[in-house]
Amino acid sequence: MRARRARVVLALLVVTLGVAVAVALATLSLQVGDDLARSLRAAGPNFVVLPAGATWPLDLGGAEVAPARAGLALDPSAVGALKTSFWRNNVLEAAPELTLDARLDDAPARLLGTWFDHPVETSGGAWRTGLARLRPRWTITGRWPGEDGAELALGQELARRLGATVGASVRVAAGASAAPAHAPARWLVTGIVAAGGFEDRDAWAPLPAVQALAGRPGQIDRVWMSALVRADPGRPAPDPARDPRGYERYMCTAYPEVVARELGERLQGAEVLPAAERVAGEARVVGRLNLLLLLLALAALAASILGLFSTSTATVVERGGELALLRSLGAPGRAIARLLLAETALVALAGGLIGWALGSLAAAAVRGSTFGAAHAAEPLLLPVALVLALAVALIGTIGPLRVALRLDPAAVLRG
Image 1 (cartoon, rainbow, N blue to C red):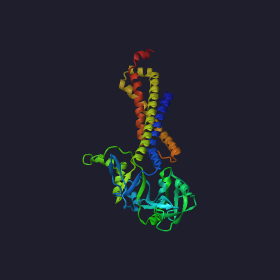
Image 2: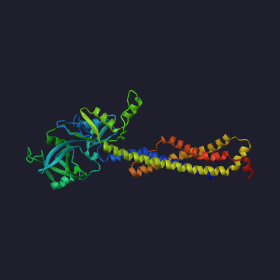
Image 3: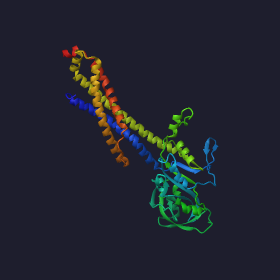
Image 4: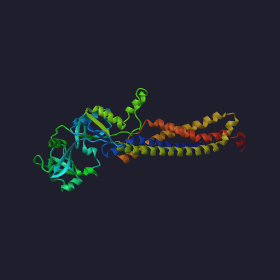
């Protein structure tokens, strides 16, 4: 090997580059999948928590309709209870909501009471959550209202209709009728929200203020929640009697149905409904990203195999005299095979180790520049890198090895 340093270095480089690319892509698949899922979660909530029995499922010609039932409510403590379930680490943000038909400066509008940046005490410490964290892509001119006080934020369409700006005050009264039951109070407009949808017609205010205005202290209508989940597998859960291990794996995977069921059991008097279309769309994006990374890794490994094949073939041709002399002295074919495979295996293991280190560094650089959060190397990928390197070495050496075993010693030594 010392006598063939150029060939050895070339083979080492081929294996190192192939394994480095594969390790980098595998690391990104493991880490960026969660990053991308969290980035997609910025689009808004993908679960809603409603009072138990708040919907009546009706079948109208094959289309399921769920009209709301009146007179049901949740307690705001349901938000904190989300962090006591098995999926507490998957629950990212949540915000309670109380809907009130109100009049703002004598114009009918929907007033939503909610939290904006509210601390919630959980077993793991303080958890700050609310509308501002649940809807990070909404842009606001000014600021969100405080958690207490007579303040509100207006959707941009509602603000144009009222002619209101940041710092102005509007008269707020409960009820959509033209004649309010009591004298309207004046609330400060702290921000104008651009949501980009029907929400631009709404107004948001602190939950306690809306509860007092609606005469519903300690009540909310729903909780919007954002959680990390996996795509629905499209099959029911395995039968626990026939396949207990499969059932356990299914119930320990963050499928939307599993998360909704667990949270519904944890929240007494509530039902949790996933936004199936949004969850499926996000899962498709992450799944296609992983498929792209897999195809790129396979392409890199295929290029390494071809490079090692050509290098090993050139080595066998150069060492034809040496191999023919070994055969003429009585070396069996398996001894020649062990010699060539051992040399290639040493180069492959060295290339696998170096490739794992380089791939981890490359993945950290790519992830840090893209998502702003580099991550440590994945030690579990080290044995995978070594196995990949050995596989590349074996596949890339089979062809040249067959050439070496078919050499005619007499013809080669005769020159």
